[in-house]
Length: 190
Image: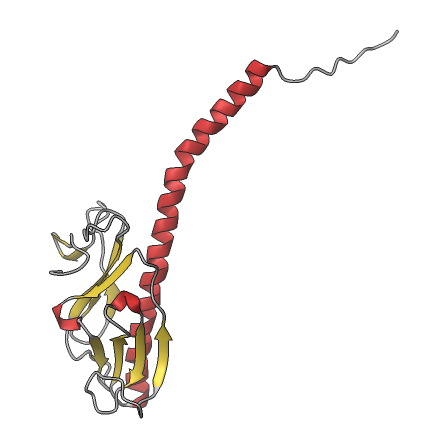
């Protein structure tokens, strides 16, 4: 008895249905993938800045001198430098040692300090900051200077110099400086 095998391919209808389903699945996955990428970039840049602040604080304690983190150019997102601030003036002088430099963030990102940290953060030999304040990092690709849900990070420096990332207590994507005090701007007044 002979057995015949029929090798049949897909019909055009089956192929079109499969491609349509795949297209729908991809269209649902792309926005969440984009959000995941944005969140990852925000976390990376916030951690870069946080690491520089922690480095400055630990070096101030270790060396027993003032160590300053200063923006490199016009704004913090243009880059920053960590250096031994021998005369505690917040300015990088020719004879002061650079500990670390960080380049500019991508063009759509803003990093701004509040009124206390417009130009620099200085850590004293005790590890305390010369003042308290906060920094706001935003993915400001729509250029509206607003901290929209899931597009920002807030870093806070307390009176003993400790740095922390602010929390999103109500899980709405906006970070609070204190309880029920959401920060909604990327560039000033936070």
